[in-house]
Length: 418
Picture 1 (cartoon, rainbow, N blue to C red):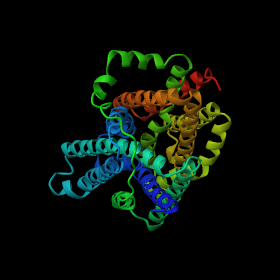
Picture 2 (picture 1 turned 45 degrees about the horizontal axis):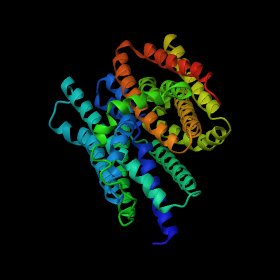
Picture 3 (picture 1 turned 180 degrees about the vertical axis):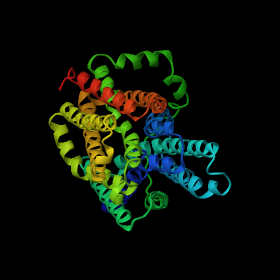
Picture 4 (picture 1 turned 90 degrees about the vertical axis):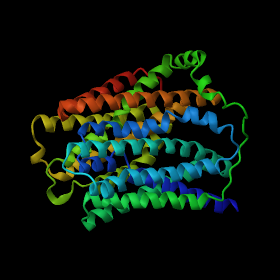
């Protein structure tokens, strides 16, 4: 198999994977799904944390096991098929199967079906963690240095364009949100299976470290490891983790904003899942290159500008709720608001990625990023539980607290080194 063929196959797999991430987003599609199912509002606060933390927290332990194996093909294939399985459980079962056997009007049904979605999302995220680890080795094993970023860029742009076209098609066709979600589920399962078929014959071998992972969990949780872990987050590194913990609100705000906006006047039929998918895809396509270029010049400023943009939308939302202005505002502006949230999130995300790359060198950087990701995973879980509880206080309090979190992050970021 020549290099061009391998490169094309990897691009196809990456495009399909990124397309699935966009269409089956915990920020857009899954909040809409829970809303359709009538699940309790507190479950919204757990969607992004479960999706993000499930992919971050287990990576340290998974990598300890993975480095004892020299093949990456089988673990990757199994993780992809596992994701396809949980997508089916998450969407087909609640929308098509359970309604045949349970009373949809009962509160027990709403809670049970919501919990099913959350459990399936957790399984999907854990499988995604293994996919992420193995796919990096596959890319490194078959793509030359200097060309890997180009491949990822092509895949991201292509996935953004495809998701934009999908959103436009479903919006113009007038399909209801439930129909759109079912179509997304079918597309995502097919995408996973096509990815497996595309790379199933591409073997990736890496040097294994026999015996290293046998006591990985025990070693990872040892007192010495924990002490070294804590020592990592001193000075500027600790400040960076604090700021990043505050800036995760750029992602946490999305499900609450979407359900709030969807509950308002849907004049002209603009407030639909398809319109939010279009907004998110457009934000990715239009802002990713600009944020990336700015991050190379000043990663700290990029983080700040992205978080500030989301903060301004959050404050505008608080103003609208406080003075009951929603009915006097055209629906299109709520979609624009989500577009700006997505642009801001992309900026904060791009900035913190580049800042993390620049803050350390070599193996120290790898060690720091791994520990930072695990820490952020724990923070996101905690915030998810906190906001799930806070939903009982109403939207005004919820968005005010999110605005406070972003504001604290911006203030702390002033003391970060450029």
